[in-house]
Image (cartoon, rainbow, N blue to C red):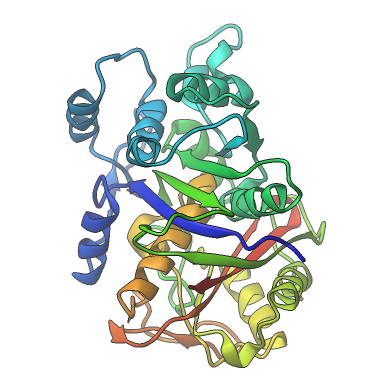
Length: 377
């Protein structure tokens, strides 16, 4: 019998706040980090969710003496510090980094690749700072990275490779990422509207999030969420376009729910990917209906945080657990009129409800899809 794996602590750094409590309060009040920002010199402004750099520097200076870190690294360190202070690092503790682009901003105006741009070097720098003793693990699989990092931690602990794990996930707004998505004509000209009839594209975002996972939770943990099931499937549909039939996401959800031994009727809430692009939202709607999940309350957090790439899956998992702890469903921001061909139960306002079983999904470039099932213990 597999060990039971628990999430017992987490933290996040976002445009809405530098801890979970401030983020949750902002979400209850309907606040969004999405606003117009000038990201590329001599170009138009874009709707993105961006952390105030002055506030970030102030917060970092209040917590750390050493300033020899990139902006992204400071986001990572701030998100992980409260967890490391509460949980012991041993020879059997994993350190997992989830990111898609890492220190991509270091490439600007460089003739050769700086060492810090390599993802393993970024992971090792963060691990060394906090004194991790095991070799860092990097999960970089497009936009499913954050969800997959949870699955990697769960499966490695169950396999006996580690006793516990710290996961850290993050990406930042950069000219490189904005230019790339803009070349696809995928960036919205207004705050994004996942699943809405009038949606016209994504907003990019930035954040860092951290999570502690263990098979041996202590008695004084404030909460426990059991990771019941996980799956990641690549349908190899297209380098950037999602499957029209939802095959990969359908199979990921099916496998995760099968491992969790949880039926569609038991799922209380879906934290979906919901990028607000025409094909992604439609694909998700098809996959959820194929799994008979069309009546389960569902939201996308992209209207609050934008699409935070490698951080999105971990951050949105954290917010979904906060929803469960507070017995409150958060609306899918900016949704007004159904814009997909299949029925979905999109949350439109704050709702009190008991949330025990959570399904978190993610999809990304290259046909990757992932799902996990969490249970409030």
